[in-house]
Length: 234
Image (tube, rainbow, N blue to C red; front, top):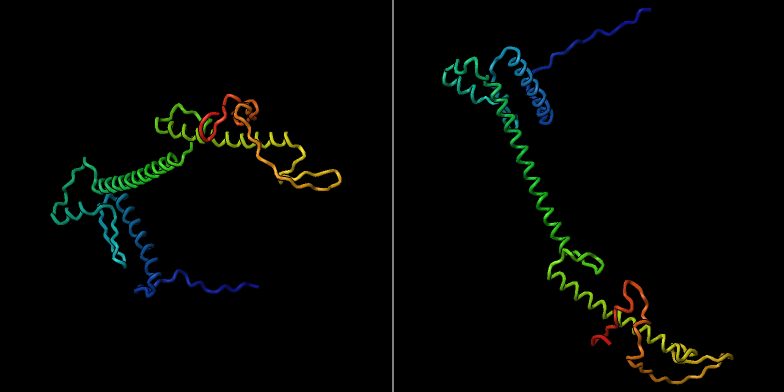
């Protein structure tokens, strides 16, 4: 049984009239403009023709094929043999100028980006320098006078805090050694859990009885570090 095929409509001819929808009109303009420029390029390449095309979009934006100024000047002046056979054709010259302009634009944009990145780098470096903290174990070869003074003041403050903490620990250890049965609240506990409350008097430890050898050797501080108090060295 033969299969009946529907007659083909073939390539239908599009009715040439203004497109009502603005979006569809803009899309059609872009496609048709590209087609016109492609045909102009082929004609110029195959035949060596000098072509100038200027098109304005529905929104009023201009588009041109190559750089039509030379061709228009030749047309207005009536000199159709301005260029000799040995010189480049205006089409080649216009294409070269357009390429140079495009490269200049890209170069300018790259310079702007580079300057912006340099500025960001300088700001970041300044912020890091302002926020940088110099620790006592860091190298000091590259420090200036002002930075060394700040570091020295910080180390002095650290010595005072370490010495005060060491005094507290030594005093607590001494008191616990003198009164092993005492709790922190001043209460003595017997074996039958009965309690006797009494008052204690603070024990004064002479400075000569505190030895630097009693200090723990931690964090790089030992006997040579010295005991610093609020009023200097004991």
